[in-house]
Length: 290
View 1 (cartoon, helix red, strand yellow):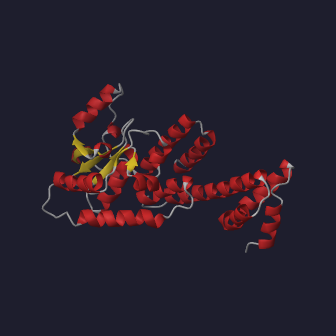
View 2: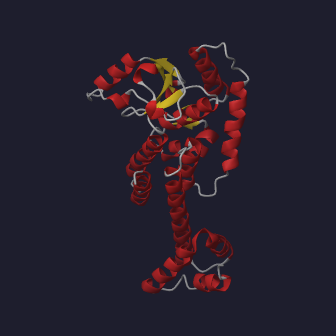
View 3: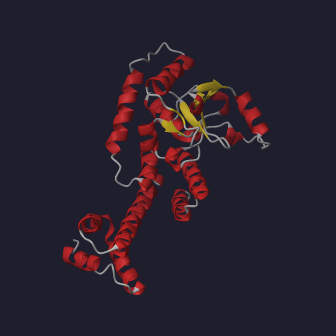
């Protein structure tokens, strides 16, 4: 059980000018974990001890929240299902630790219901895609963020749902989560410099087990759900002057998808010069690849 008096005493010492004393106090507070955050935030909001004190509280709160996210991502990585929605929510909570997950779940529940009402067993694969495209890109107005393509905000699911703007992988993730809830056999494909979806002729639990021959066509959510063939991927890869590797055509796992999101964030933060965030996302990648 946490000793409130000890916590309060430690907090009062946070403006100590001696760095050795501060670092010792910092480590002790971090060791308490997320249960100490309300006390830190209470003091931050209502007390006036100067900028040094406030900055130190912000640093400690962030570190506690970051360590908690690392722990949750590790649990997700070692889970059996690797639920994609939960994985992308955890990435969003890195930047928005207090985000309301219910808002995100409500969006998916309602959009699933809207699409489900339009589907029936007699529809062809392309007809199902047209319905999803209509609902996401016309009714809801989702579109690619071509103005700020490399913005890190494009990788955070809460922000993408709120603004209806995203990058190729975030729009593909929304599309993918809805399709799989509807038992439509759509999977992510990890193309270089792009991310697309594949429509297979069967639904399997593990995307990496989908046979290449079972893929009927590909979908580009960044281009409002445009449908295209393997030949167009071959042309795209040729334009990039890259070797034609099997993984450019085959479905990838949910862990690989979240890995790709993290790599996008590293690139975005690096362009902005946010070295600390780059290093933190690299730590998340280390957990995903452990």
